[in-house]
Image (cartoon, rainbow, N blue to C red):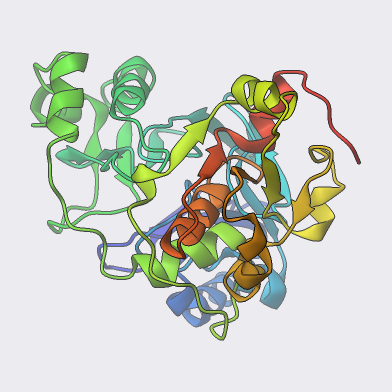
Length: 345
């Protein structure tokens, strides 16, 4: 197996290659380094099979979509990833064949709802859930400190103690650790109960990443076009959430809310369908079309997307533009379908 970390920076990108077949995967590629990745693949005479993001990144633009356009390969993310045009959605326990190598998907939410880890041979790539001597923050929209604790202690920490740990970020110059070392010495986890961990993570008071506006929203929308500009948002974690059952109850009432679907057109009539009477305005177009919704400012509006992430951004945009009755469909069309509620296609 060829295994290399390519960035030599706080953001980590891993190359996994099968020497026997020449097939390769890039995990968490950074958009600014795409030229380097193409050169390294060519040097090793590797064919790119998979482009894998372990989660939706908030501090840098993903390179997956640009690389797919340049040299091919399938973009892989968890089923709850918000971005459209993902080639392969994976779930816990799925296997990705890479020549003679097998990658096993572990669903490890908490940092984000779509976070996965990847087990390959004697190591595990933990994304931003488990870091070396730390864990990923859980205060972004959709983050959940309790779920993160469960992901680490009930899933990652069940791996053998000698399993090598390779995170998606490191800020102290480390390259790897082991599951056993993290169990014993990780200061956020060692000796803490779930309740103590949740209290710690909910009170870190960390500043937002410097590039969150330039990274998070384009990554959610799979946009490579730098000309598309998004407005500065209010706090995403202040957006009011409605679960599918409550949304359906309100739709059946005498004064139903406006359903604003912010996915791409091909998703609207795709596998998940859409809620009847929905209005489609893709998230990338919402800032320029917000004036079209002015007549609805006195109505309740429920924003909808695939997994509830892009629509949280949409709800925050509308709130920042003076809409006072905006809610988000928690879990998006994934949870709506899982609840067996009606859809149109």
